[in-house]
Length: 164
Length: 107
Image (tube, rainbow over all chains, first blue to last red):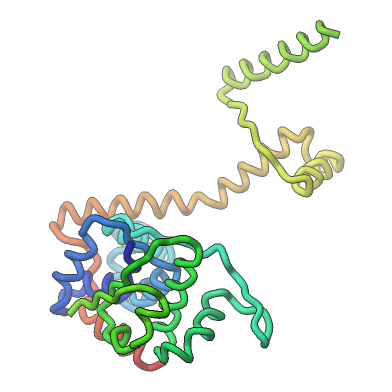
């Protein structure tokens, strides 16, 4: 099973990027592909700032902007056969108090991985999804920062496939 | 007595048959005690005439709240139609990957 990073989905939809073809090939391949709520949030954010696209699609679909974003997310998930997996673990108690589980996992992983915030959060989601029984063995990404995190593979027990 | 039990079963069957004739169906639902107590309180207050009516009306309200999900699912289907018409995915995010990676790099 592969964890698909937002960057791969965005690359597949970005006609100006040379990684588009490879990203699409990967997304259209058979096999189990999982995404987290963070992927959906990042995608929603990227979509919401495309004024012309959003206005055009909202009008063609006859929906509000909010519902148009939800419809696009659903379409993308179905188009590329991406399975969204919600986390069961929602909160964890750290010395500072209760914390949303992915954020707590990100805090715990930060010292070893030294990643930037969103990459760190993706790593945290992978860790938690694996803990909850998802057999994730690969992180597919177009973000080269994941490759620089030397301990990522050993700590999370995954391979990193970088689309270049 | 056996005949009381038989009458009870016949009544249930009549209710099911009537429900089917009137377009309704019987669905077995397991509820936790807290929820059932709340339903009973609504019945006791006279908001609803029975547990059955209370559940039916509350489900109607819940279904109404989720109608937007059906709209979204229908719109996602329309996006597949647009893809067939245009011959490509109708979501074009030119320059978005560069932007995403730059934004990630800030934090």
